[in-house]
Amino acid sequence: MATATPAASLSFPVINMEKLETEERGAAMEVIRDACENWGFFELLNHGISHELMDEVERVSKAHYENIRENKFKEFAARTLEAGEKGADVRDVDWESTFFVRHLPASNLADLPDLDDHYRQVMKEFASEIEKLAERVLDLLCENLGLEKGYLKRAFAGSQGAPTFGTKVSSYPPCPRPDLVDGLRAHTDAGGVILLFQDDQVSGLQLLKDSAWVDVPPMRHAIVINIGDQLEVITNGRYKSVMHRVLTRPDGNRMSIASFYNPGADAVIFPAPALVGHGATEENEGGEEGSGAVYPRFVFEDYMNLYVQHKFEAKEPRFEAMKSDAAPIATA
Image (cartoon, rainbow, N blue to C red; front, side, top):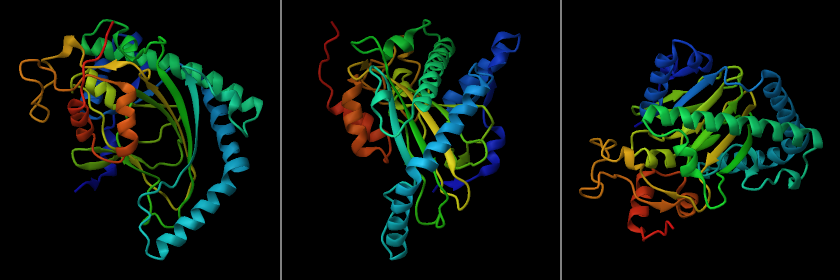
């Protein structure tokens, strides 16, 4: 049974990206390697996104919740609490208010209701900066893995030559009964690499490490990176996606702006040939005999169709299901 160990967050991996341009690069790259292999998460400081832009994203996002979404959430909250206090199991809902902005392959920003022109412009600029950071992070991972620069970006490109890229804007308002409901139930992320701009005043995000729940510490102007299921597959298990959750709190409204840089819908995902034979561990041995590949080959959209039905369950049965469903995939 998982336990909570907030003190473990003291050793949470944090990388100052400025050190990548100095003689400390080797040490910084080692922190990234250890984080990807043993944590599934790390935080970036001095990542190149201006503090002024991040402050404005935070300001307009919090204002949008207060002006547009708060009343609707209060209606949901009242119904949920009433049901829970009457004995109903409300663990299958999430205490969050959220909307999703799609950036690639085609943006829906202009079509979203209740966003003013300034918010749209701020989000467009932020998405552009996050996309550049995501691709920089992917190349750092390529370097750590010994893969050719650009390999992961190309692996994510579908037939349109672009990833699936979008941003989930969430608020986790105060909950008077944290014992009844979570902010977001435990899960791994289905996609590639996730870049999170989270509230630096209100905590709540935790990851599962060594059977214990560990706080992801709020840090001002940091971007939290976490590994999705597709990177676990491409690295043949060398990198791990990990379960994480958001706790409810009786005070504080936590902001979360999570951007998902995922493969294109028709991208074919499989372990990188250069890593086959290097990813097997005691936990994930048992791939195809003689191949060294511990993970199946599949189309990303097929994995997503399975994921939406089983998001809040362990990832391993999803991988096994993709093996069972595997059929020859055209690569020409």
